[in-house]
Structure formats: structure tokens, C-alpha cells
Image 1 (cartoon, rainbow, N blue to C red):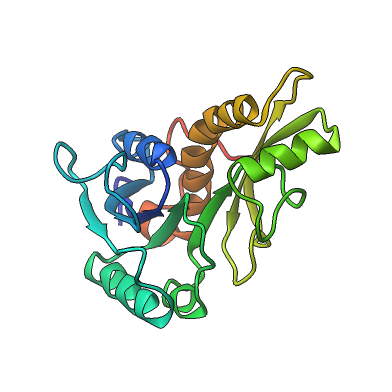
Image 2: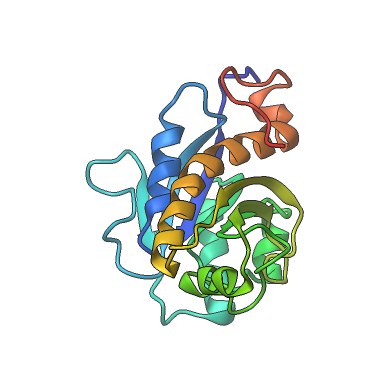
Length: 213
């Protein structure tokens, strides 16, 4: 296929949707290797891209749906929309073996710290930034990684650093990290797709998208 063909992604989130919005916006570029075919949320659809005013389908799986039922419903939607990569954006649960197997391991996530530090169970949202400040670190950041059956242990795709200032609160640090997340995620995802889906996007790097070091 030609290099203009895009990989179809689904975004799965449960938070405010700021990373989902950044990915949806990036996908509109002709230089993007991906298109957003579906946005999935386990909470209110408010704040997530998709639905009215966006050319992206939105599906809600209620938070009450868990375990095997959730995995079955998720896989059904991924099949229905012919999804190539599942992209997590604020999704707090472990992804099941069933889903990882169905997606052939093509599930990615962004974490608000420089993994492998400040990762693992319980390390999400403000808890991460509180831990960074308590450690006395002068630098933090965001990491895009492949999802496995363990929290935050998959192979790293890309990482960006941001400074920690003496006057920072968890909230101010979170805001600075979020700003870099919105820039990092689309670039890292494009890099991952170029590396793993050459049969769809072609072997030539897409113009304007640089690899993440």
C-alpha cells in the first residue's frame, strides 16, 4: 500500500480526555501515520473527542462493566472498527491478556513520569507528581511505552523530560507534564507505527515526523 494509508487507532480513556484530544488533533494532519477510528471511554463522554462535531465514533463502556465482560466487549468493538493499535489515555485498569493477545501486543500508553522510576500500581495522576516532589528530583517528564500485563513495564517508545522547580506543587508539576505529554504522544505513536506497520504506512518515514530518542 502507499504511504498515504493510515493505521487505524482506538483511544481508550477514563479521564478528562486531554491526551485523546491531542491525538485526535494530530491525526488530522496529512503527515500523521494514524487516524482515530474510535474513542472509547468508561466514564462520561464529556471532554473526550469523538461524537458530535468530530468525524470519530464514540463508544461508552460503563465503569460497572469489568473483568471478562469488559474484555469481551472491548475486543468486539476493536474487531468491529478494524483497529490496528489500541492507545490508552487515562485508562487506569490493567489490560487483560485477552485484549493484549487480540491486539497482537499493539497496545500503547503514556505515563506521567520518566519510567522505570515512579511507575507501577498506584502510580497515577497526582500520586506520581507527589512522589516525584517527595524524592527531591530536579527532573521528571513523560514516557510512552508498550503495554504489558504489568503496570508500566513495557518497552519504551519515547520519553521527554521537564524540569522540577523548587516552588512546584503536585498540581503545577502535573500541568507542566501534561503539556509535554500532548506533544510527545503523537510523535511517539507515529514512530511506533512506522516501526511496526510498514505494510500499511510504507517503509519511507512520513514527512515532518521525527523519531523519538
